[in-house]
Image 1 (spheres, rainbow, N blue to C red):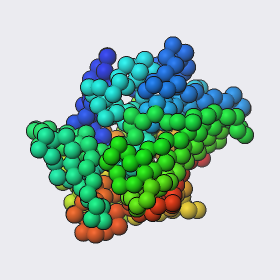
Image 2 (image 1 turned 180 degrees about the vertical axis):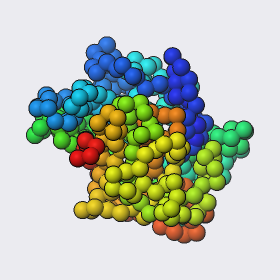
Image 3 (image 1 turned 30 degrees about the vertical axis):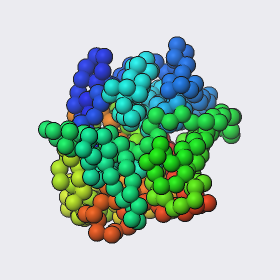
Image 4 (image 1 turned 60 degrees about the vertical axis):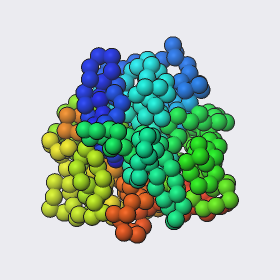
Length: 400
């Protein structure tokens, strides 16, 4: 998953930030700093029941305790709770209060196209994470692009620059408003698991074939497994990519000392952080401020990040990205287990108290001419075939 500036506030304050795909986007609700860990007043969002996964704490080790999921909003993982020795129960994701989320996830205004869904928590981005540029329609409502000679018309849901009627593109997929079907929660060893199915069809007429999406999210103490499988149930080939947009909190609130580890050797260059259009050029990270390959991670300091990293280095087959907050004695690791994961988008404005890490299949603007025919990571999904995205979360203790 990619971004521009988004307003990081609603109700109590307003702050302009940028999303990994860079754009002027909806007002982003302020992440709750003294959150309530459970909510019974609101039971439904997006026309579907809110789901809370829970497990009992065992011992005094770092462990996941719970998760809140919005099946009515594309299975958005709204919040994850964890126990951290010395800090107690914490929120893993940067999200607003539960009531604020319910108030803005209406499908109207700032939430047109479901855009508010990816401004907090962890939204799933399918069938394309990040930005897609193309020819803007006369009414500025759609952009047209193509894949293997086949035209696709996508919602122009992102605006940027001084004239939003002329500067628009498509971003973060087509399921942000979708209601997941066949949602089930079952106890599994060490915790609980939620599953669901989305008969996405041709994504509202915007895609080339028909797709079914299968979701599995498993909560245990040591790990959270998130697995999404896309099945081409249509009759023609289609491009497919899957990504996730989780905003990871920094419990200390001290971003400068927080450390990031990204095992990548290249960074995609863009024209600027307002438009975020790729130039088609990749730059080695070695010797630049964007080299996060030190095993212990590198402090974020005052560096603004809204960057796509590639040529990933795998360990035991996984792309392991780590965020540590030494001041809070806390850290989290994202392990991308699918071989189709080719890039990692990192978004963290210098004034923010979060780091968004998006493990995804594709480069930004995967159909763009600037790539000159390069493989940009979109899976060529043939009829009757499937592709799976699998990411695992682990808690870390800095220095161990």
